[in-house]
Length: 268
Image (cartoon, rainbow, N blue to C red; front, side, top):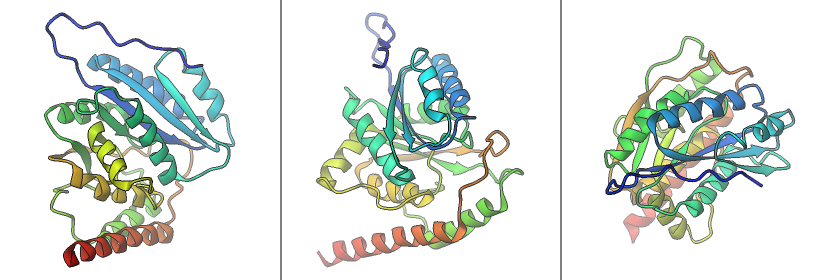
């Protein structure tokens, strides 16, 4: 059973602050997940924000589960598990549904998504949360430039992926739709889940799932903002899982679905 971490006491007359629910899909990341969780704890305590971390262990074959168990006692952590890998998209949706169901104040609280391999550094949480608290319903990231350590397959897949997606939507000014480091207002997620009426929010995998999620949630947001993010490839230990052709195929699927939906709305 997970240890309970009560919210920090508030001074009388002071409004409650944002509760940040951090969702992390994770598979075979035993060398980075522990350090990542500790850094998240450090950043969130430094910001004096209440937070809860949800990690889905997606059928890991290494020591990821054992690493996660070590951190139950030092930060508010919920561990979800899959016996066999289900993929990034399905893992992300399960985390979304768990976090959206756990929030007590959906109009105030944030649901943050990030990766477990340290390419998205927890230091970026500061800008993400503060921009969210400035009134945005979704805070996404724009690329801060290509890292010198970025594998060539990642660089190529990102370039082709952006081409495959086509022109950015009006609600996505400057946003890199393939980056998954984002903050969503919990009420936006709940509205999207109600509108889906039991259907999955995410039908694609990998980076395409991030692009699909933005298209699904943006219609329920009043304001979408962005912050710069520099990706890190000098910290993680494992090689990239990106497959160029597979990534492009998934992204083209997102584009086709979006076009069909637009045509359907136009006919209606």
